[in-house]
Length: 269
Image (cartoon, rainbow, N blue to C red; front, side, top):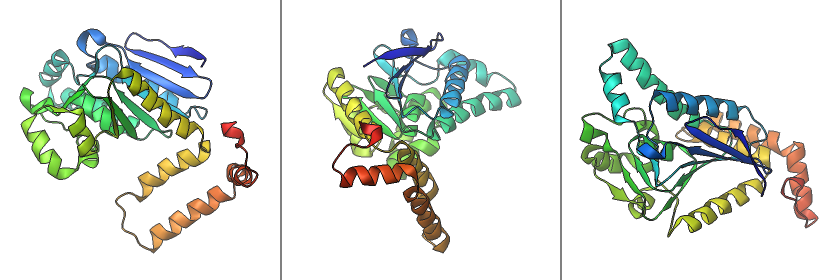
């Protein structure tokens, strides 16, 4: 597999292979990939740029070193809290904006949890479409231990684990292991070690890149438009229009023809 660097700022490592798979690595291992205003800006700008890249098929998010992300950096949080109300709110909005940007990426996103995911690190996990964790990873909504709350990450975390689980883990701040994260629905798979972690991520990537690129993106958009909605005539009509539009496109014609002809479609060849 050929990889080439397309950006290498201090806080982020970014690689793309010839299949359109981008691997984004948080690169602050000395502080367990905690984020501050600099990393938030770098990551948000990088995601914004990637969101317009139609050739990017999959985005894999992981952390350098032994941790995925320890969440917000304490010094930055102290500084933000000591600012005036306006500046404090603006800092909080930047973190909320990062989570929203990651959640709404048009391509599938995979969190590769290689170690601890704490506070905002759990938020990054929950905003990704898929998450795979190594068994020794630990998780915590640790904000209450610091006298703060998981505000910016709460919509995505609640969607992932549900209100009942949040009533325990948001309020206690206790740590839980990868198996519990799997039971809660925060991650989709747990692996024994990092080599199996990479194999599990690669398996997901293979399934995604073996599917129609436009269909995958359209399916992700479909989820966002349908989830939580009341099933009324308007929703039924919208979903019918979506499949009709997709079915009439060149990608669907190629996929259906390839199936009938017992060959691989052009995007998977």
